[in-house]
Length: 338
Image (cartoon, rainbow, N blue to C red; front, side, top):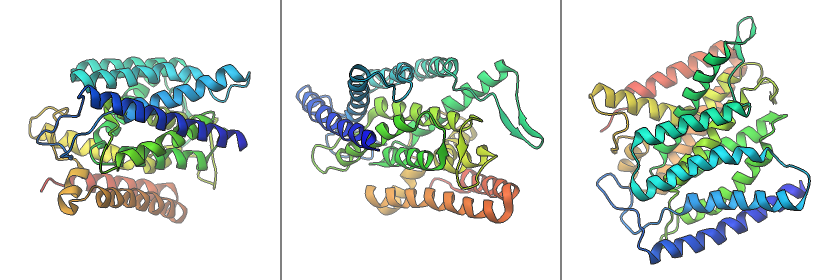
């Protein structure tokens, strides 16, 4: 416990330090996020939140890598995650083509698969099913890319992507045992806290940028895949079907992604087209406040999660499955752009 506190405080210090340095540098170079029709901000903002977060996590890792022989987590996971960060960093500066970003996300998924983050065991009615390894890799890659982009999609109002990441990482740390990512998740949790503060500042506001949203999207996707590993156990009697638990945890961003993709394809537009039809944009149009919109969406996530757990205990897995399907279909098909 003492080590986690030390790691957390060190990460916070690094994050604040890098935030102040890079925000000043970006301001000096006039590297502000452009204000366009779909922007939710109207003032000069720097996209330095992702840079600060990644460098803080990396710096904390280096400190313990050289100061102790004990490995707090598998440090090699930073390599594929750094590719996502660099991809987002390049996108922030040069507006990268979506096909390049998609290709790099697939490469990152493959690197993580080779490190053991692969969905090769599924819960079926007759126990655990083991698919062909090639099929497992394809399915894992699809899930990874979907989750990464779903997090990137919800990064549209102050604090939303960071708050959702905090919700998911804290939930996974609390609910799971024998999870090799627990310490890494703790580092991320502490690193995200300063970003939340800088994201809500009235002057000198800072956004995650694509460098941050892709990085934390990769962290969330990696955690979701690892949570489904048979070796990771869930407390409070929520085993064995962890797919349903994951559906509750990741419900909001996946529903928003599905709704947007369906809506754009129905209108014969590109699924990657940027607009203001995301759920957070619809809420913001009603509240005219980022803080109020954030509270509404987080309250929705928590309500869906705890209602799902209640239904699970009351009606078992079949009841939860029906609840998830009805909630998913309702959000995808009934929530329309006003």
